[in-house]
Length: 141
Image 1 (spheres, rainbow, N blue to C red):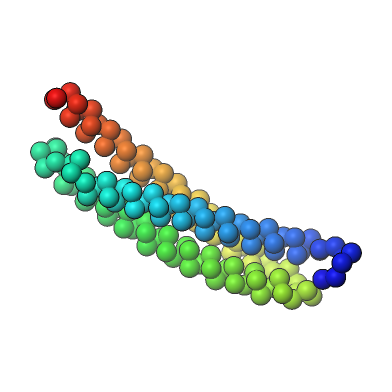
Image 2: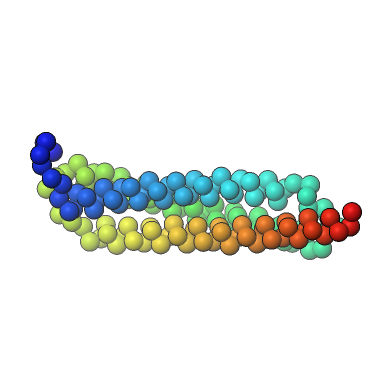
C-alpha cells in the first residue's frame, strides 16, 4: 500500500483481530506463569500431611491445573492457526471479508475468556485454601 492510501475497513478489522490474537497469547502466557507458581505451591512443604483432607484437595487442584493446561494448549494452537489465516489475508489486498473467519474469532475470544475465568476461580480456591492453612498454623504457634 503506497503513501496516501487509506486502509479499508476490512484491513483495519483484520489488523484489530491480529492485535486481539497477540493479546490473547499474552493472557495465556500470564496464566502459564501463574500456573507454574501454583504448581510449586502445591508441591511445597507448606502443606503438611496432618492437614485434614490435604492429599485429596491437592490432587484435585493438580488435576484441574492439568486439565486447564490441556485446554490452554488447544486454545493456543487454535489462536496460532487463526493468526496465520489472518496474516495470509492481510497480504492479499483484494480479498473478501470472511464471515466464517469472524465467527472463528469470536469463538476463540470466548475460549480465552473461559480459560482465564477457570484459572481465576481455581487460583482463588488454592489461595483461599493456602490462607486457611497458614492461619491455622499461626494459631497453633
